[in-house]
Amino acid sequence: MKRIYQATLCALLFTLGSCTSYEDKEYGPTEFNVELEGGEEMLFEGPNEAIATITFNPEEYGFSKESVGGMRLKSITLNTENEKGFNVFENLKVEVSSDNTEMLTIGVMNTAPDGKSITITGLEESKIEEFNEVDEFYLHISGNLTEDLETVFAISGEFTLKVESTEK
Amino acid sequence: MILSAVFLFAFTTDNRSVQAEDGDSLVGVWSPSHGKAKVKVSKVGTKYFGKIVWLKEPLNEQGVKKTDVNNPDEKMHATPLLGYKILKDFEFIGKDTWENGTIYDPENGSLYSCTIKMTSKNTLEVRGYIGVSMIGRTDTWTRLEKSK
Image (cartoon, rainbow over all chains, first blue to last red; front, side, top):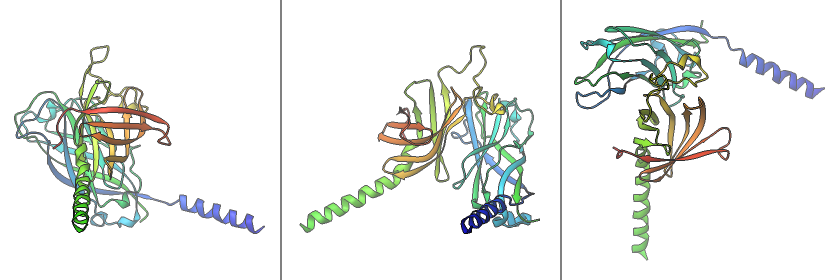
């Protein structure tokens, strides 16, 4: 009888534990500036990437880090002053990595981008769990250039994350 | 006797410092044994990632650039293979070994746990597996570019 009671209690605690109720909070918009990594003012046709290092500080947006669960990208806007704009890319991809979580693709644009300002919507199903363990993360913006560029390709932008929080 | 002890200490200390720096020896461009691709490994934070930077056959049968058509996630089917990160999240654990990462095989759309062991300055043993490391496949990769 005692064993049945203990097993029931364990099952109840497990169920309660796995039913933590989260609410989506917006983290952002957060601004960043990056340059495509490459040679000295020379970028080659093919895969290229820019990596922004972002400090994760949810307190800035009104909720505590301890309350955080998963994280998704809501949207990211990229701007460039380059005369050819983003038309020199055949695609763009946004990934997040950190020292504490696995890399995940959170946004993709598989059609050729157009113009000097573009917005990519986050992939709803791409969620990074346990984002509360992250102090700093890396935003990887990558794409394939359709031609060589004899220039620095600077990107400014802002992103907004949807972060799960136990705080109401 | 004292001299040999000092020598032994110096050797051990020196060896340790070389090993500590060895994590970055993975950085560079590598070719799997099939020679169909070149993979550039770089370091971000404390981890190592590798992306496809060259394909022997960049176009599919229709003459269009190859994309990730075998990915179980349909949203990735239009993503170009060129630039694709197939090595992710590797951590250097010492003894010329990087663990806790994954390798993606675009030919079948499968993701495997992976361990990388540097067997010489210019060769890697890349072991992909599902579940336990004992059941898997090992491929030898060759360095194409000096590490930085």
